[in-house]
Length: 458
Image: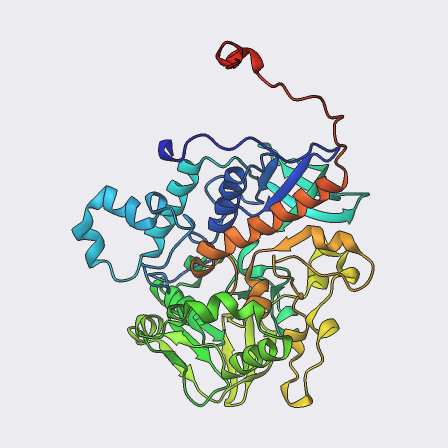
C-alpha cells in the first residue's frame, strides 16, 4: 500500500446526500469496489453487509466445494495490481515452490486471502447492516437500513445516497429458484443449497438432492461426509453433465469482455442455449460424492411433487415414489427484482429483459425473461420516465444475461470493477457539471516581479 501512495482527494461535489455511493455486500466484490472507489477519488462511499464481522461472503458458509472452480492464474480482486494478488499473498507465506504445485485454490485458503485483502486495502465495512428498502429522492436514493446491535436489537435507519451498488453475490436481484411444492415443505425437512445448513443433523439419515450441478453434488458429498446414511441425487437428464477439467471459457478474453456489446438477440440466444444445455458438475464434485457407498444417482427422474409425510418427505419422481428424512434443492437461482423485498417499492419501474426484447417463440425462456436489463455500466434501466432507476448498479450474478458472466465471480473482477467504477465516476462527474457555478474570473497573476530584473531594454 505504501507503493500506491496517498489516495486522491475527493473530487465529487458535496450534496445533501449522506453518501455518494453505497455498496451493499462486503464479499470479494464489495471490498474490491470500495477500494477502487477510494483510488478513483470518490471518497464519500460506504460499504455495508448484513453479516457479522468475519462472516461476509459465502466462502465459509454456503460454498462447499473443496477448491475454487476457476484457474488460480485468473486475476482476482486486485484488478491488475500484482502486489495484492492471491499469488503474492500465498508466495509471501509459503514461497514460490509451494504456489507452483497448487492446482486449484482450496476454498478455505481463498477465504483467508479475501480476509487478508480486505485488511490490507482497509475498506471500512458496516457489518450487521441490511438494506431493507429503496425509494427515490429528488436527486438521490433513500435507503432504509436495518442495523443489528450487539444486544441483538434491530434499529431502522434512513440514509441517502446518490448511487447504489448491489454487490450481493449469487442471490443477486432475486433468490433461490424453487418449485412450488418445495416452497410448501417445512424448513426442518427441506433447504436450498444456498441456505446455511447444519449438516451434522443429517448423520444417519437419508437425504435427497433435486438437481445435479456442482452445488448439488457438493451438498450431497457434504451430507455423506457428515455421516448421512444415503444421499440420492435426482436429474431430469439421461446422463450427468460432467464438465471437462480443461473447459475454461475464460481463455477467450475477447468474447468475455465484449459480450455486453453484442445485440440483444445474440445475447439472448447464447444464454437460452446455455440454460437449455443444463448445469454441469465438475469431475471433482462427482468423484467426491461417489467415494461413498450411500451415494445414488437417479437419471431421467425429474420430481413431480414432494410433500411432508409423517415427519419425512415423500417424493414423487419419474422413477417412482421415495421417502427421505431431508431434501435439498440444487435448483439454482432466479433474478426477478420483483421478488426482492428491499426492491419492492421500485421494482415496477425496473426494466426486465422481457420489457426490452421479445425473442422468437422457439427461444422463449420464462426465467431469463425476468432478469434485469442492464446498461453498459451495470446500471438498471427504467421502463419509462423513472430516471432514478439508473442510480442503481448491479454487480452480482444477475448480470449474467446482460454481460455473459456473473459479476462478483473471480473472472469478473479484474475488468468488471474498473468498468463499474468508471461508470459511477462518469455519472457523478457530469451530474456535478450540471450544477457547476463558475467562479467570477480574476486577472491572472503574471509573476512579473520574479523576472522584472531580467527584462532587457535598450
